Length: 387
Length: 230
Image (cartoon, rainbow over all chains, first blue to last red; front, top):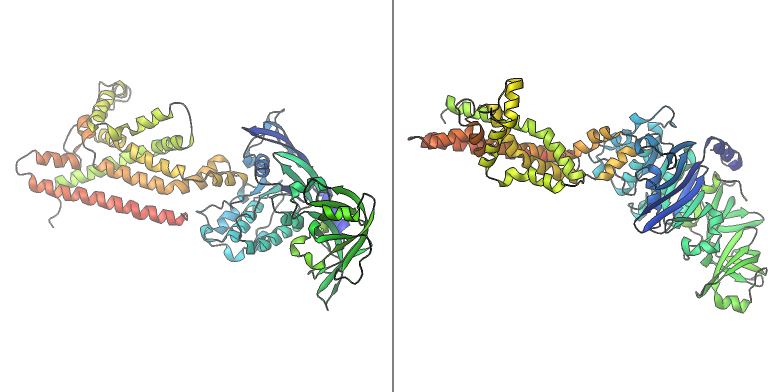
């Protein structure tokens, strides 16, 4: 996909991808799952704490479990409809599933695992090229290896390849990084990023790690106690103060779509632009003009009534207070409008001393050094047009 | 060592034939039973489990007698077999195989059941998400993973059949050349004067056969286990 043409390529993608529509209910003992959302392609993250129903939801989509009521349709094909008595069996759903624990077949080698589903692919399924997938996932050196001898990261890459080579209509990934060493996670994330940008099939990605979601997802579905409490673009969801208990206060912060303007070699910095504003960050390895997303953690944002002078802070934006959220904690969260939504987390003491009210004009300050690579996501390249 | 006498060879060949046939019949039924016990839950499962294990705990003579009243020429099934097909199991080597098979059945079921229970159902789910129909999942995933248990079951049942005595002598008697397997030949020798030398030779043969079978099972099981990465 050519850089610098995000709008055009995204639109082309949209026309070929049909929506996935889910509206299901299931009750098992004390736990009830009730989810309704639709996706228009790209990568959708199911985000929530453990026990919120993320894996159950994916199993229901795959057909490994059956909803009590509702409907699941993919590309216009109904996979499940309780009212009409339709329940397409797992093997006929043609949905790829990457399990948390890889589930590679221990008696088959890597190549045999990869090829397992190919014979069942239908002519109508989106075709996949063995060589291309193998290269994309860096598996060429592993093909003759026995699977029990692989590392966690290798297993997961084989599992992703195996799911894709069955030519699925969409890909389900249930916390694919859970069994991967911390050091290898970045590598797998890049592979998934690559797939997301190269493949034309929708991906549904279960995660409870915000940095994965920000890097990978276009859309997110926030699950809490079996309910989808919010569905929408990552930027939109992350700027909602009411969801912060769900998205995690410590990691919470606004997500801003930006583009790379230039690099500063002297200080190893990059300048990112959004609207009229410039954001200085530690150098990112992207060409000028490329788009990306930056999460600015609320705890890294400080506020001032007057424009700060002679400060170490490189990033100072002026904006207005949109919303103040206090719920008895020592800190309050302030939603600002600096052209885009920005969230600051400051003490309630400061709120009182600054006499902050909705509509007030303030300056927001962000330490460039606080923005690390975990805060950067590439999803903006192919997702919705900005704004 | 002196070569084996014709009578010894006859007993050995007969024993191998009887045990082979017994295992052959046991295997499909044993696999199905093991599968049902490992995977299904239904009322009366404990009863089925009990019945399957009965030959392990009741005296073999009881089983032999039950076979006789069932499959004998005047037995419930035996009469029917005789009238319609003109075949009878009583006093034939095939009958000996049935007796050996019934006695070995629980050992085979136990071995296979354990390994069916050890198969990660998640792997079968994974195969189905890749588009494989159920029968192919069974053939390509479950069966290979259960193979060590099946092999163990086969060898155990074979070894048990080689040693079968009580049920066999009760059901099909002790007919030279027809139902006189190794243990029965050994028993016969202990019943006649001057039989000690012959008996001792058969003892050595019986022990050797059993040892070979057990070692073979061990080697095979290990090789298969290595191949499927367990």
